[in-house]
Length: 214
Image 1 (cartoon, one colour):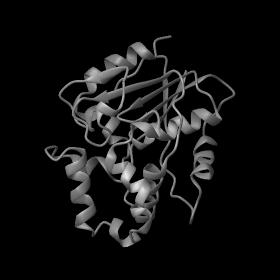
Image 2 (cartoon, one colour):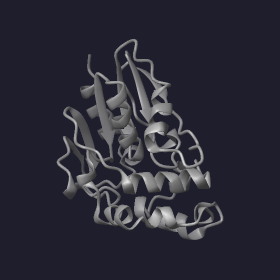
Image 3 (cartoon, one colour):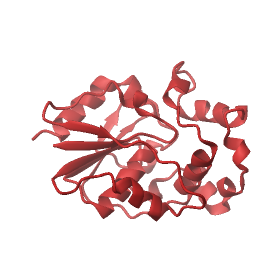
Image 4 (cartoon, one colour):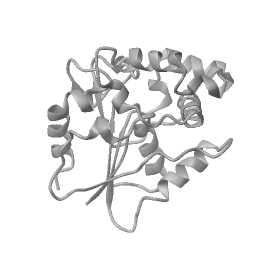
């Protein structure tokens, strides 16, 4: 069975590299595409989904923003199972900060230069938000194209989605990006932050081995 995996906002697959899967699963990572100028989210989702072969059964796994993406892909190309790590199942589960961004449109108004690599502000904010104590945090976030980052944050803050059945949600109890109090996850990783796939890989892998059991 093929498993398509989408990582988090600005993240390559380093954050997921310690996860292990059943021997019968073929993992294929879907890299983030750079959005076209003023690209609509629905069009971007279709471009991501175009790389999924739905002529055979498949699974989807998404981390953080990737969790939002795989649910959107699932809507176009239904998967046999969908698992989201550190992500939300509907816009109702957003934190007040993210909801505020969607209401005020502040992310859309921010200049693109705010998201470039020379902007100490944005990267300092991301470090504090994801896991300020993790010394490897900059190693996980390598997709640093300014327009991609600005566009992605806009789309997360403005995302509207109704909860779909059978989406398996795994969250950390100390996540401040998507606080657990706003959700009712199927599995909870204890004493973990938003970076739990990297910091608690054994616990996460044990759950995935059971979920994706043939």
